[in-house]
Amino acid sequence: MAAAVLVASHKPSPPPFLPIPRRRSSYSSRISSTTREGPWSLSSAAAALLAGGTAALAMAASAQALPTDASVVALAALQEPENALSLPTWAIHVSSVIEWVTAMALVWEYGEKSGFQTWKGLSWGMVPLLGGAFCACTWHFFYNSESLEILVALQSALTVLGNITMCFAAFRIYKASQEGSRSS
Image (cartoon, rainbow, N blue to C red):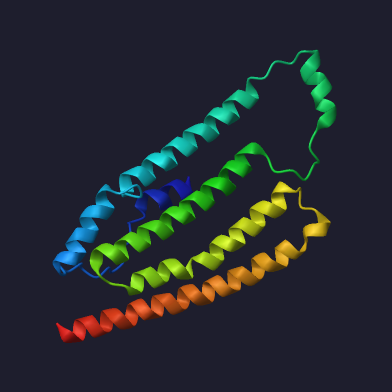
């Protein structure tokens, strides 16, 4: 009950400061018009995420609706190990990777449309963390095999590297916004 009161009384925080995009040359307006209509527009990214989520839910529902006849009982002997991830856990892992790639694309698109090239650096700074996510998914795909323990170390190294590159990219965005506010 106390948690419900706490959640109900929580006021949303204000949105983070984002520099207001300025109109650039006709070249940047051509870029923004082509990216809006291109294959990686925001609406197509949202449609892809919706389709992926629907497919994951359909697979989960079909797995629950399997018959329990003798052929399925025979397949039960081919069970996965106990440390295998469940279908909902896999859905979370895969959707997290899809969300991260979408965030990278949106940050890149913001950098193109606003003319603030430092935002593209943030997108590049996100790449090592994506590599770490791929390491985790690969390790889980092979049932956390001891022979692939190197992936755990690689994931942690990529996480540290990704945190450093994201910090550096955020600092570059900060410096660029400070220089922009001084000149205007």
